[in-house]
Length: 265
Length: 315
View 1: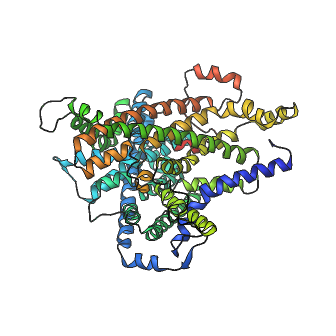
View 2: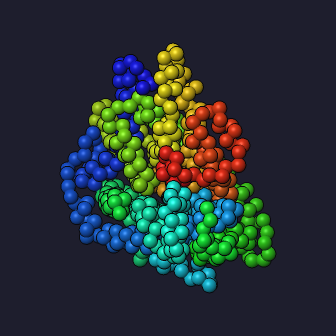
View 3: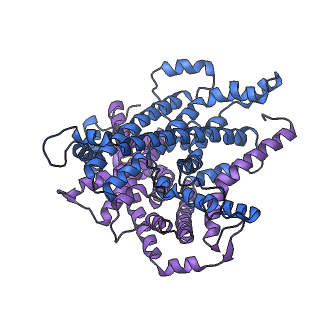
């Protein structure tokens, strides 16, 4: 306890909430409330309505949601496989080679997302890879951007893993493939599901690289939200944003349940 | 420990080959092409720095560079101060529900940045809540707030979005501060400000530096927040890359700006990795006196089971 006087503590807590509530709690609350409001230019929203959601159901929002989900699933799966594979391979390498691999796989974090988009656009608009204008280029971009996080969280989990399990199994004569499949992967499962959730959430909200790449028939939710707010339909944008947040949350909650399940195995 | 099945180094490298090949195809090869294109003039011909001179001398580029650096520096400073203050309260002036708040902040990180700008448009936009309150109260035709389309609006959104990235490592570092030291300092008569300065801050400095460097890199690369404010006069380097490539179709110019942006943020990211690498090595030594010795020692142990190790999994 740093502050002993009760009065001083009350003042500090008051200041804390004065900063915290408008900065962090209000934004998400405002978006959620506005999506149900007909108008909002006073203290409270007016004309409660579901019209924005009804419009979404009729418009292109279901397609955008499906696009986002498919992109996030495909990119997340690709990132998880590549990242896990690389992390497992890095564990067996020497120190210098491992550092090289680390640098290589963390490089996309240091490169601005917009530039990742530009680079893919430049590279895949010419032979031998012609992907410009296809959904695959968007999925590739998302996979590039989230692989670093998968690699990093699996590497951290591998470092925390008790080597005794794998060593005992190997000592008892299990082949490396068996050790990997029966010991390491099951022990890594909680981290893998957590990494999958992270990749999925990041991909669902990706806007920067997508803006550079998306073809007209593959418009993910964030681009739709931008299009709505850009033409001044803030309330439609808010409803779309709630759709995005709810989907992300649902998947993250599902993953965290998976994680506790995995912990009991 | 002898391991009968430990593969030879050559085979281990072979196993690393597929993911590296995949990465080379979708990251290294495209980036190399970007650098190549930035050195190729419009009319073809050999590599030349002419595109750089052409872009760098424009006022648009210079303005964007200054704006980017200023906003990034401001956002980093703001996020550091705010994150430090909020984390200090959560960790050392605890209140019921503080832990839940820390978790709420984690949730914050799951959402994309541009949602903050969207919320700010409702809160402080020209037809927003704050201005509505003002016009209702005073009867004026317009509210006083009209800053969202200026750099200040971008700054407010970035400080809000990036503060949690500072709080995460800080809260992990604060959890490792020995409370007995605080009690001792307090019973010896040190006032809270002095305890924070002389006991808590030295312990949290590596985490603070790591958080700050990360926010600096992320704010240099931020695109969604700036795009959503719809401000025509706030142009940062990523926005310039986007507008040159997509709106103007000037790929060579976009590549030049992209290379500058990569150089800037990669240098800062390398700094961040150095700082966090140092944190990992020294973060676990409880005694400040021993820290210097640990820093010079060849660190054989990677980040392992240290408390808060999981929270470092995210850069």
